[in-house]
View 1: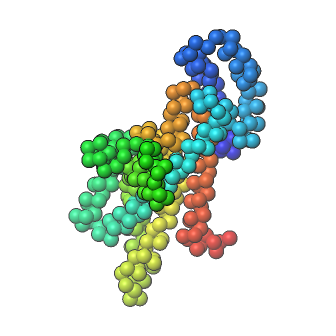
View 2: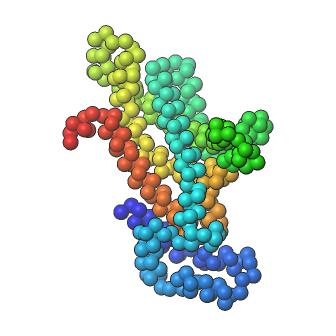
View 3: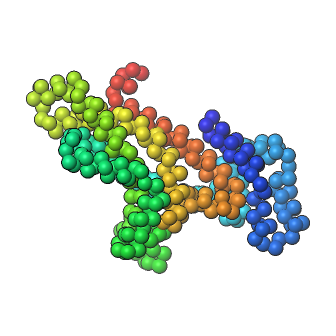
Length: 311
């Protein structure tokens, strides 16, 4: 239902927008008007709105998102070429978001009120307040341009990548991945750390933690086996929110770092009035919302045995 509503809303908004996918072609080329009109008839753009809508839904149900006039190929093919890069970036950012965020939040909770806690709180709040595109530009200027530690953009070094060994290709790809992944994951890690700290502080004061200590368990066992596991439950719900948000964040990050994913593809499609690609990316974002919530539910069941016992 969510995907259907997003597809419908996207169609309506594009119909309200001035022009059509061929308008851009008429603005930047000397294509005769007769040719453009024939193209509109060929692609059904001259038909009534309700006919276009029915045809659009039928095509989407078959996985046909239409023809990309900017890419000169089906929109599905353009997205299929770019989506592995976006998924790679999103996966790396997710690891940074939750691994780093949970670690920092847990450390803060165990050192509540200390100088380290205050410093980490200030750092996470500062990162959380930063616009992701501004952080990306700053990291690019510092580590990519000034220091030259990382590439300034792209997925691989096109000049040397074909001649590298498999291990060398992996290293080259990871070298290009670090800056955009850190940019996309750092802001999420700051938010996760604050949630994790609050959840840990709420758990460590509960009776079962005091009982575990009273039994003589080591503090590390109390921390990892009892407090941390239960404190993860509220943070797991964030997964369903962060997973689709990575797509919207990747639009900015991929543009800053020239990362050829679907985020950059969507930006180029908007500028070029490539409505087929815009529609496809919007539907993929809706699917990511559904998948993210499903994964969060599954992770919650794994982390909390009570949800399995209630079945």
